[in-house]
Every structure is written in structure tokens, then in C-alpha cells.
Image (cartoon, rainbow, N blue to C red; front, side):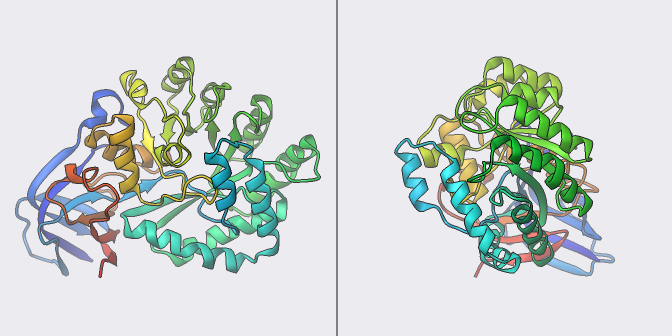
Length: 403
């Protein structure tokens, strides 16, 4: 199937399959008044004028701005209970995160896999309508073998239902269940949950919440080493509330990404750079909780290839739009529009190990893209809070059109 996308007003995309840092982070390629040819779901050519021979379908972009589909590399988008009261407590300074997680686990225990998937699908559809074509989803609200498996099966069910790419992550180490000794629960993660997750191929990554009032460095290291031994790739919630050495641990274990990092130390930043771990920054959470933003400019200045994600979750951040995340990155963290777009596309794809396939619009990559009713990509943060997406295309096929 060959599809020609015509009448593109402006196309902006990063290039390559490696994460971009330093000055390269802002290096978008900008094309004006071009066409894009899709062959068998992949980008074949971008040019001023492309021949019509053997074209099966023509899509008129109507002068739109075209960007690669957003890659949301950090979400908790499957859950059984909304947490507005815990959210209000947090913004008033109560950072005891386990309360909401434990209440969420009680709700998961009584929910069915089918209900979890059904109730969370609308959120993913909203993400899609804002241009997200790939999303990572973590478990974590299970706090038991049965609960974690149920959440991961619900993620698998959503993966089969929606026409977007979903990357599942096992986050058994998110909180601690009520009435269970800390060491006993960690032992259960290592000896029961990780083997079950791997045997049933329920996740691609393992993550641990390593921070103040959560999992300590030795505990997180034990879990992540077991996960790596089982063949899972590694992620880490690191240094979000306090600098506890999470970034350094992610570097030592050569994790794919270290996420949050609002309180990361300079030593931690340099360790991430030396090890090739990608920092995934979550400005939506800092905004929602009135907390410090990650030191994005310091990271960029030392050459770290930062990525952006929404951290969509029921307890601290219900922002699902990567357009809003880009706006926050520009307005609150000092990124240029170009840097923010690269961080939300190519670098985010690298944070999921998918940059060979997605994250930019160039020959051989999946034709995942969106149309935006804007004069220029630079208007994205200017129209903060708006959704200018008129269509989303996945592998060359329209999967969303605004009414």
C-alpha cells in the first residue's frame, strides 16, 4: 500500500536513531511545502513533488504542520481508582506516596482485567487525539503477584484494542502493601513476580521507585539486578523528591532511562552521561504538585540527551497531552521549541529502545505522524492548553481525525 501525503505546509523532524544531546537537541530538519510518500507503512520519500505512479491513496494535509508522532515514555495509565483526595493532600505538602498506591492496590484487587482495560481506554484515546502514537504504561498499583499480573494483562488487552504502540513496564517496586513486611515483599518481587512476568512475556522493562520514603538504593539494586537476569530492560524512578543516588544507580546498572530527576545531583548527571542512560523528565508532575522542575538546562549544557514524558497517573498528574508537556518544558524549564520536540519524539523513542523504528520522519522509519492546524511548529507552546491536532497517522494509516 503506497500513500502520498500532499499539501504539507511545514514538516519538522529530528533525524537519526541515536539520542541527541547538547546543541544537536535543537537540530530539527524543517521542510516547507512538501509531500511525503509512505510505502508499506514506512516513510519512503520527502520531497517538493513526488511522482503519482503506483500511488494507491492520497491524503491531503491541507497546509498543516506535520510532526512525528509523540512518544510518551513514562505513564501509569492503567489503574482502578481515581485519587483526587490524595492529589489535594500532595499539593498541600503531604508526600506520603504509599497511601494512594495502597488504596489503588485495594481497588485493583476487586477489579477485573476487562474492567481495568475498559475504564482506561478513554485516556489512551485522548492521548492519541493529542498526537501520541507510542506510549509506555507501567503496572505498579497491584502490590501483589495477582494484582501486578492483572494490570499487565489489562495493558496487553489495550495493546490489542488500540492502533497505537504500547510498551508495557513491570513496576512491582512502586510501593509497599499493607500488612506485609518490607523484606518479604521485596523477596516476592524477586522470586515470584519477575519470573512470572518474564515467563508470560508481560513486560519489556522493569522499573523501581527509588527515592525518599520509597525503595532505597540497595533494595532497588537487588530488584533491578534480578530483572536484568531475567532478560528485562531497566528503568528507574530516580531522585524525584531528594537526591538519594538514584541517577548513579541507573548509571551503574546501565539502565535504559532514569526518570523524574527533579533533585538529581551534578555527579548524578555526569554519571548518566558517561553511561548513556537517558534522562526522562516529567514537567507535568512538577507543575501539578507545585514542585521544583528538573534542571533541564544544566543537563543539556553537559550534553545529556533528555527526553520528555507526561507521567500520566491518577495520583499526581492527569496531564495526558504531550503538547502540554512541550509547552511546560518551554515555559517552565527553558527549553527551545526545537529541543522540546526532539525530546518528545526521537529521544523519547530512544528511552524505549525504539529509535530504529520511530521518533522521526525519515526513510525506513514508521510513518507515525500528526497534522496540526498551526502556521508553524513554533506555535505549539504559544497555544498552550489548546489541541490543534486534526489527524493522526500510524504506519501510514489515519487512526484519528478531529470532528
